[in-house]
Image 1 (cartoon, rainbow, N blue to C red):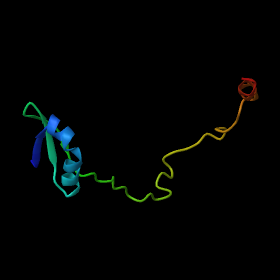
Image 2: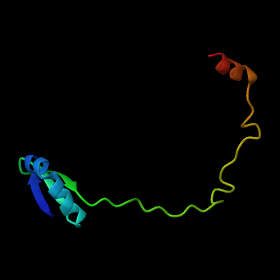
Image 3: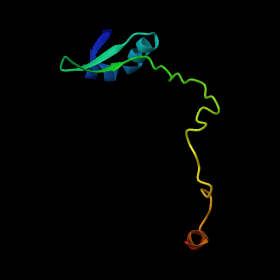
Image 4: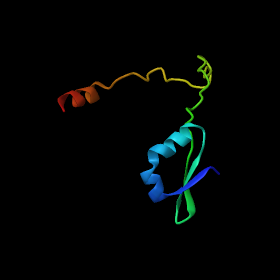
Length: 79
């Protein structure tokens, strides 16, 4: 489970606890002896590279998707 500290100790030793976490440990923060939270090392999200064209045939745009009603444009410009 790693190091267990109460809230008061965690507040006063936060920098040292973060050093432990950076070294690969986990730290459990407890309130009245009951575990409440766990500090663990941050791991950036691993994303797969995007592959162009994977949505081909799955989405479509209407032929007039970019047509603009001139009355609406006029109303925006007057505001």
